[in-house]
Each structure stands twice: as C-alpha cells, then as structure tokens.
Length: 372
Image (cartoon, rainbow, N blue to C red; front, side, top):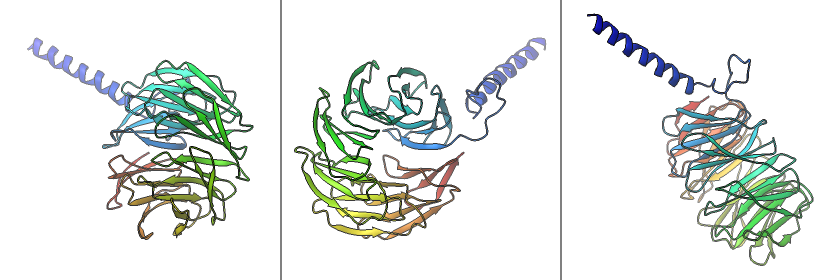
C-alpha cells in the first residue's frame, strides 16, 4: 500500500511539474521585465508573416515576435531581445530562420524551431525599416532610417558590405526574383538599383516628387513598380532603369504597389479609401475598388491571384480581381488593420490590428479564431 501511495504521489508530482512548466511557456507572461507581475495583452502589432510551409505565424510588435501554430492558434514562443519595437519580420526561404528588424537599430536572427536567438546584426545608428532574404536564403538586405543599405551573410551574420548613396532613410529593400539585383526605395524620392553580389551601385531611378514608400519586382523580374507619397505609381525597366510610364489617379499617398502572381495586374493601395487595379503591360487603369469607409492600410493578392484582401479602418474587404466586385467584408477588428496576409495555400487569411490577430476562412469569410 505504501509503495502504491508513493507511486501515485510521484505521478502527481511529475504532472504538476511538467504541467506548470507548459503553462508557463504557453502564457503571455513569458520574458517579463524584472519586477513586473503580469503582461496585459500582446503589445502593438506591426507585421504578420506566414512561414513558407504555412504552419507558423510570426507576429512582430512592440513586445517582440510572437510565434503561433497557424492551424490551432497555440502560442509557441515569444522571441525577445530587441530593446525597442519590432518593425519588420521575415522567414528565410527554407523556413528555418526568422530575421527581425527593430527600432533599436539591430537585426536579430532566430531559430524557428527552438526560438533561440542565433545572432544580432549591429551597425545602424537609426531604426531598421526593412529586412529581406535573398531568394536563395544566403544573404540578408536591410534598410534603415539612416541612408544606407547593409548586406549580411545569413549563416554567419557577418556584415558583407554597406551600400551608400541615398541621402535619406531607406524604406523598402527588395531582391529581384533571380537574386542578382537589389532595389531600394528612399525618402530621398529615388529608387536605387544595386548589384547584389558586389554591392556596386548600378543606377538611380529618378522622377518621383516625394518619398518612395514601396518597391516591387514583377514575377519575371523585368519590371519594377514603385509607390510614392506623391500619389503615383511608376513603372521602370529593371534592366535599363528607363522609366516606362506613370500611373496616376490616386488622390493620396500610395504606400503599396504590388504585382499579381502572374504579373498581369498591379494593385495599388492609398491612404485614401480606394484600391486601384492596373494592366501591368499597358499601364491602363482597369478599375477602382472603393467600398472602404476610411483609409486602406494593406493590400495583398491571394496566391492564385483571383482575390485581393485589403485592410482598412476596422475591416477587411475581399475583392474579385477579374470583376472588381466586393465579395465580402470581414468585421470584428476594433482598431485599424495594419497587416493582412494569405496563407501559402490561400485557404486562410491572417489580419492584425493594433492589439489582436484574427484568422479567417478565405472562402467563406468566417472567423476561425482570435489570437489576443
């Protein structure tokens, strides 16, 4: 009897020990500052990214980077170490590493599986605004509130080279699909093209009359689209740097201009309340999507290119790309929607406002769960 009692006691001890540890790891009270008793909420949300295989969500914010199971919504980890809010987060192409850029002037690399900090990339005096991996995952490019771009070895974290020439902050850094060219958009009103291998400046694309807020390559790498605070989108020949045409019609700042997956359509989002669709080949205005009640903050194509999701004041609108019809409006957010992203298979949408993340069924529009 005594042995039985001791066995039961041991089992309860193990359950309690492991259960308590599990609860501690799954709790939003991870990594509290010294002296703090509890954490209320997850902090402000700045960006959401799916892992390449669609199994995880990384959420960058004011506390750190939260990692979720994308199917169950379970909190898997909280990555802390930055000393200021995290502005940008991106998975490596193979999904094993996360790179995060912060207002503390550093980039941190993290092991996705363990959550361990691999290394810190330092050297900026100002906020890191943009971080991206090369298509082969070997190089990281980062832009900052200062006027330089830095290239880093993704494996060792060593600084490879500094790309200088902009005269104001670098807001957008993008690799061409083949990884040979980097395009950077700056608050100095220009786009610069760089040789990704040598870091040499190739050419400067001038013509915008205000800050360049977004730069994206077409899927085939032949064209660059840039969105600007001057209210226009400009298309450029990626090889020669020649200006192809200017797309005008927005009445406010264009913060986003992106190509559809097949490269035939460009969607642009404005701080006004509209999205515009353009024929990427001719530059003709195809249609205007105008059901939002206030500014549009995020515009993204579904992986198959048939649907657009746009985030507005407190709602997400889904649109049929072919007809321009609004399919449905997803409501439930209580503050402006900062980030909207489709899962890699296109079945789920993740959206974040200042405080919460919602997961939605992309086909029905039903809310699956809230991560708060």
